[in-house]
Length: 307
Image 1 (cartoon, rainbow, N blue to C red):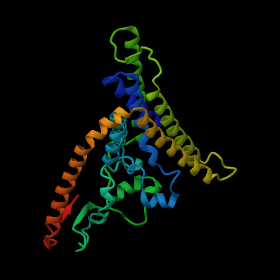
Image 2: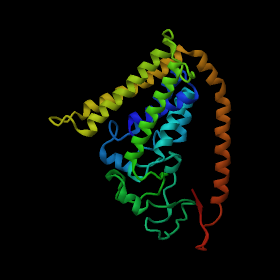
Image 3: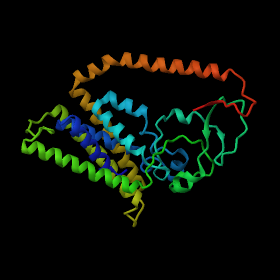
Image 4: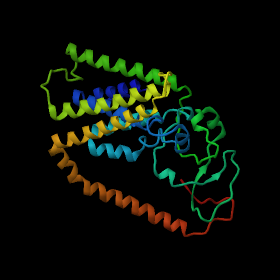
């Protein structure tokens, strides 16, 4: 999905369910953030092909949870972005929802052709299968590693990512314009169009954060498309990428300083969030510990723990 599609879809969802301009802006900004894990700016192409951070590093439930600690509406935008990307096929990388936990499992039960692999006593937990050949053939070049890796991602039914992207973009813009028109004509107040005074505690951090995101995307797109062919400004682009991330982090810190009451409210929930995480981790560890204590099955009809 392209940048405008994610942002417009997020704003459309915000207009339907909330209608307040500040919420729409936060959801729209959150819808742009996950693509900060794209290939340019922080990894060489070889390293990128090896690690495969795109659609993984910032497209997962852990990242959504971290965004929620900053702002729930920002997290909603991150989720909507990841949700849309999950509809795409291997050509567009799909989504690695359970990153980084999926990187812990390094073995598969079946190879990419469906042949059962020998079980290793050192590994008690397996993914079902290595990357499917059909999916690999249809994917981008940077998704075709020499060494087959376990199938960690989920893919959607969209056969044409470009057609899906265009349809969602046009539909989102149409919905936003329709709701805006109804609000202006007084048919139904879907979007609050009243002019509000400047609120520096919201407007300033938001503007700085949005500027960081825009700088990141502009520098990255120029780098990726190699528009500047007369020279190779790799250092300049990487420096600009680091600068953009610094601006985004600064906007979050500034927002916390200027909205301390919200920070205190979020901090009061952290013990409960931590307790929930600890409970899930403890139950998962106990389950895996019990299962891993059992010997590997010798009967081919049985399987080890598969995730």
